Length: 526
Ligand SMILES: [Zn+2]
Image 1 (tube, rainbow, N blue to C red):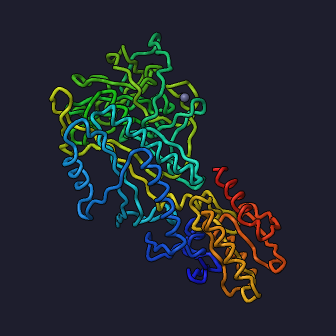
Image 2 (image 1 turned 180 degrees about the vertical axis):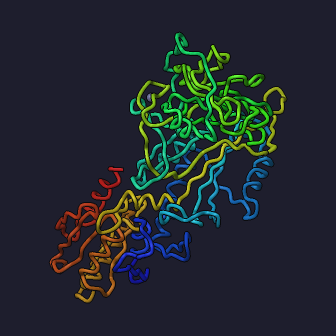
Image 3 (image 1 turned 90 degrees about the horizontal axis):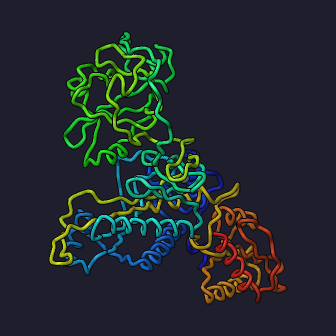
């Protein structure tokens, strides 16, 4: 393979129209070309990285019993489900595990971060059709492990966090997505789902002055009320009116906390929850939005976050326009509510599983795994002739974004540094002076020898200055560089890793062994 055939063209200067590291490097190195905002064409070196990832995922997927299917372009999701329906007769055909490669386009996406958020991307979709919810949960774990393992093998540090399913987060400093991780047990969840302990003791209402209504003209937010009454946010209680499966529930959280709808839904065991519309809030609380409170909210069941149990003498809405109630105590001014873990967790909170402190992890969400909630009509014959509905899990991973993360995580001042498993080639043979007698032949022979040992190599045979070739080699980041220079005529070349660029003088006949050893070491570090 020769770079002159690839027509590699690198840019001397980084493109000026982007601040994103991955886009600057990938475009400068000629891996991709920008077509329009959020849309890129992949040139051979870039396409090879994507295809290598595809192969690694396929290996791992098949090892775990997932097999490829190719649905039609129109309504592919429906087609996958219908095809599964035609395949599944009885419990014997379950679980059914499939995967699909999709090229996706969404014009509604606001492009950002170079190839991290694009309008077009290459997507891996995994499907598991399981006999029931618990087995579907197991399938979700399997998908999580497949995705995490491959991401780690290609050199990304990833974290799998729970939620409604799983999120796969690549830990790169430029990432904007977030998971909370316990610094003690290592568990991770999205903040809405991280279970928090009912650690706090109930507060007593003894000696607290009677509750009274105070004017809070047009003050609707907790921040406004806190400032006006000169009490800290943590001494306010928010009352959120929620519709749960057709009924109304009031959820109470501390003023500086946020209600997690998923936690509320699970505490109530409801199929669906959602905040009430302004109109319905006014009907239920008989006050404009922003003034609802638990006192006098008859016939509405109350559920409160554990943190409220540790409070007394707090401020709530008065269920009257422009008024709040102060010195309120639960159990005295309104019935003791049902207690539950209802708030969105944040860094510094304590893990319910072990009591450890939660820390925030920043990164880029590469994929997610979630239960399929849509209709599917997949019914099968269970044991004893019963008919049972199957449970579906679907997982996605954005390969384009994964590639961008690899660049974000693996680069230095001079360019990209690819790990051998995803590098477009594993070795680059630089022929510094192709017109020198015999040098190209040496390079060809080295390439052929490496090919025989399963090492993919490419020769830089372009008619360029040596300096430009070294610069390009560092920019495109192929993990091993073999330099065929002046000493080649005496049978000696230089071999070095792109990562540290420490040169090793090696006899031509030993090059393949040395390259193999270096690649092995690079891959082992993953
Ligand atoms: Zn923990």
